Every structure is written in C-alpha cells, then in structure tokens.
Amino acid sequence: MNSPLPQNALTLEAIRTCLEGVIPGTIATAAADGTPNVSQLSQVHYVDPGHIALSYQFFNKTRANILANPDAQLEVIDPSTGAQYRLRLAYLRTETDGPLFESMKAKLSGIASHVGMAEVFRLRGADLFRVVAIEAVAGGCPLPAPVRPRSLLSAVRRACEGLRGAADLSDLLDRAIAALRDLFGVEHALILLPDATSGRLFTVAALGYEASSRGSGIGWEVTAGDGVIGMAARERVPIRITHMTTDVAYSMAMREGTAAGHLREIPFPGLDRPHSQLAVPILAHPGACGDLAGVLFVESAQEMRFTYDDEDALATLAAQLGALMRGLPPAHGAEAEEAPAPIAGAPAIGDPITVRHYACDDSVFLDHDYLIKGVAGAILWKLVRDHTTLGRTDFTNRELRLAPDIPLPDLAENLEARLILLQRRLADRCGPLRIEKTGRGRFRLLVEKPLRLEEMN
Image: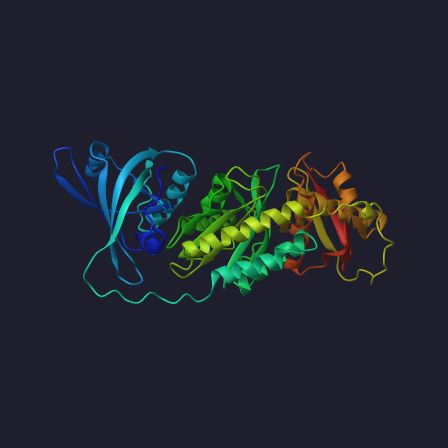
C-alpha cells in the first residue's frame, strides 16, 4: 500500500467516529466522459491510517464510474458532533475474500438484517481506496465532542497487570471477566475456547447473563463462521457492529431450535435485542495466522457502545490473554501423579438423582435435564462411575488425560478447559454434584445425593 496522509494533515484516526455507519456517507464519482454521479453508501470501513474500503453490492453507476475513473470524493458526518468532512479517494482494487472482506460482510449483514433486507444486500466485494486528502467542510455549528466515560488506555494497562500472576486457566478467565466488568464497564460478555475435535467453540466464562431464563451461558457452543463470534474465530479478526446485528436473527434461530427439540444444546444466552456487539479473537501466537486460543465477546443494548477505541483496547486485552494462556504451566504436573488421600464428607442422603449417559455423543442428563456432552460429558461419566463403584471422590488431571474412555485428541487436548467447563456448568445447576479444586492437577467430586446411573445406547 502507498504511504498514509502527509504529516500535519487531518487524519483518518481523528475522524473515525464518522465511519461508524450511523449516518450514511455520500460518494461522488464521474464517468469517463465527466458525467457526475452522487449516491449514498451503506458502509465505510476503516482499514489503516491511509486507506478505507467501501462495500460493493451492486454493479451500479458508482461501481461503473470507479472502474472507469478511479478518483472519487466521499463526504462523511460525525454522528456525535454533526461535523462534516470531505475525503478525496483513489481506487486501488476489489477484494472478494480474506479478513477485510469477511469483516465487512459480517457488518453489512448486520445492517441488512436490521432493515429486513438480508436477502438483498449481499456483499460482492470490498473496494479498497487510498485516502489522498481530508478536509473539514466549512459552515454549520458542530457540537462539542462527548466526554468519554473512562480512560481505555488506563483500563488496558490495569487489566493486563491484573492478568499477570494468574495461577491457572480458571483464575485467568476469572480475572479477565472481572477486568471487563470493573475496568471497561462491560455488562455482558462471553469468553469461548475452541474444541480441537469438533471445530466448535464453547463458553467457559460469562458475565451478566446469570439472571437470564436461558442460564448464564456456560457451555453454549458456536460453529466457526457462524455469527459475529464464529466469524471472528474463523477469520482471526475483530468483528464489531454498532447497531442491530445479525445475531438477533441468529440468536432467535438458536432459541427456536432448542425449543423445537434440540435437547442436547445449551441455549444462546445473549441479549434479546443487542444494538452493539464486538467479537475479538484470542490468538495463542501473534499475527493474523496465529493459532486460535479463543474468542472474547461483548454486547450491549446501547447503540455505538463499542467504538473503534474499545475494539483496539479489547484486542490488546485479548492478545495478553493469548500470550498468558500459552505460558500457563500444565495442570497435570509431576506433583499430581497420585490422588491425595480422600477426605470423608457427609454421606449422600435423600432421593437418588438419575445420571443418564448417552454413548453416541457422551451427553449426560441429570434427572432428565440436559447437562453437558462431548469430552466434558465423558469426564463426568467416568467420575460418577468411579464414585459409585469404587467410592472414589478424589481425582487427578493426569489420570483423566491417560484414561482410554475419554476421547481427548492427540494434540491440543484442552483437558483443563473441559474441566473448567464441567465445574462451572455443575455450579450453574446448583445441584447435588459439584467439583472443587484441591491442588495443582487435583480435584474432588462432591456428591450430596445418592446416584442412580443409566447407560443409554
């Protein structure tokens, strides 16, 4: 790409609020014979300090003019102040795949679903432009810029400092959720980790959904490429939408599917009407091709809640999370080779609870209510079998990792994440089964009622 704007010129960073999509931009182009054309744009996408991208949806007059004459002018308006700016552009190329295209596609789909035009507004390409010059449009009385409610730079610094020193993955996740709540003012968030076997992501930490009738969200799964979360995971880029999103229709479909009989799915916990959403990939190694370690997702009922500054701040937090995840010591260290001596607890009393296991997908039900499936389900089934037949309560991560009846992949086994998922899912249920950590690589199964086990084919 060519160099950004000259020094001391008005910069794209200074007017990025104008590119949030709240007020449509206006583009002026000219045909080869000089005939002008003016039209509105559904999306202007910031690429870097010297470039923007425009959505190519139809082969219309603007598109034809750009191909014939690469020079264009774009006028944008700051939705907070009303200030207007004029950008002189030079068309470079059209991208039809890759991170830029997928990010714009996700955002355009959100805009389209908001106005009921999802089948009409389909992105065909991302037109990349170099910004030649920017000037403020004279006239009018712009309002003063709003005061930001918090210093994001300070929040990032304090959050990253708070993440350091985490004892294990569970502690790291708890610290990240606390930072989102206390330092960034986020009210609703999810942290999801990838499953190497299924290719899906599962929720291991949540904020703000505890009072929802759909539950806290622990254990909810999403496929890569599905919704803003799945898109961020697949393309390894942040996906931010500032107003009503595709996840409205997406979450409704998820809930309807669950109600229609998908009994082995945890419902999507998200807001009924989110107006702002941001999904940021957590990468285990730096760079766009880094290994995916998870996704950080936040949402709000407030429009424009997450600005480009929030995106940059949470991307920095996600990068720190990825680095710390990579550096955490394994939970199945040498000191965890043998289980500690069991501690006698109160005997299980009351009516027995039925634990039903389906071997086809390792799903587990407690008294006919779905709990968990997959690797976490296989782990729970082993624990309750050993408890019932052998009287065991204390276990180690190491023995689970080596157990032949737990389907861990050879690489990226993610055992600790599955144990965290199981522990938090049981805590969500507030039932007679719980898991508590007793040391590094050690944990205890707490059983408050007699268990009746049923193996289903």
